[in-house]
Image (cartoon, rainbow, N blue to C red; front, side, top):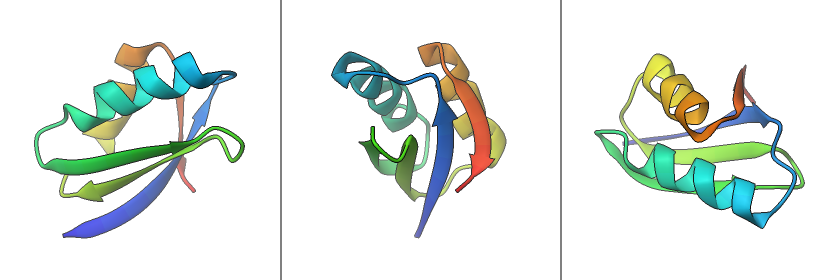
Length: 68
């Protein structure tokens, strides 16, 4: 089990954070996803590829900007 933070561009409110959290939490292998709106990050616990996380962030409507 690993924990990794990723930068997400475009989030501005609680609704944005909820959308990203919901999509990333749905990725196979992810047990937890916590969004920090001020830091513009999502921290995930579990096992998934960066590409899978990037796709989930894009599905939520935001820009994946790599590992934090």
